[in-house]
Image (cartoon, rainbow, N blue to C red):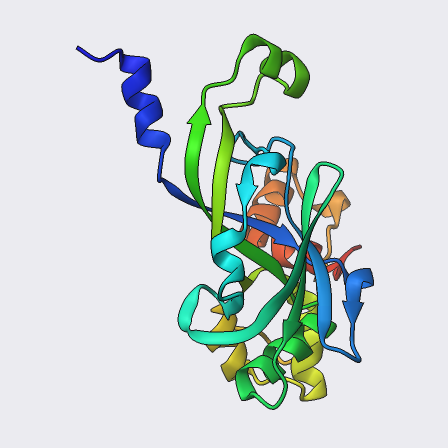
Length: 232
């Protein structure tokens, strides 16, 4: 009978996973429609995993290095120009297509710091549970180490996105609210609404003030997120 650990580690093989990273604005070349972004780093991610940089293969991907929009195979928007290893990170340079309506729209959103995400698809070829040394080096939150993997696709994605920049772009006429709904599934107001919470502690009990805050909790949360909360 096979060892349980061997059976579980066998399940790791050929698994496909996606990791999302953020495009840095200082790496964007507006003249050539190119940008550089870290695809993955050898640090613990939010899934408790580490992808070993030396074990990543880009050979198959380079044969047809097309970059997609939101993992849609029918929405190519550009191509990968190069990969390079920089320290414990894998960096890719991407160029978006010209004279293409979808690529034009996405490029405008990238320049405005609205689209900030790049999502990479890996096929896991070899993975293992962390050793004691791994836990000492990287921390106890480490769940598994991906020794060998292969990039099969990467896309620009709408998450994480900059909500305030989207609102500003709607107000400037650079994008419509309908497009915000279609591409980002967001219903945006025409402009940022200021939310003012007035508390008169002298005439209200602590319970009344607490209830007032609860009643306005959603508005307060959204206003705080947008930096438009005034408390008087």
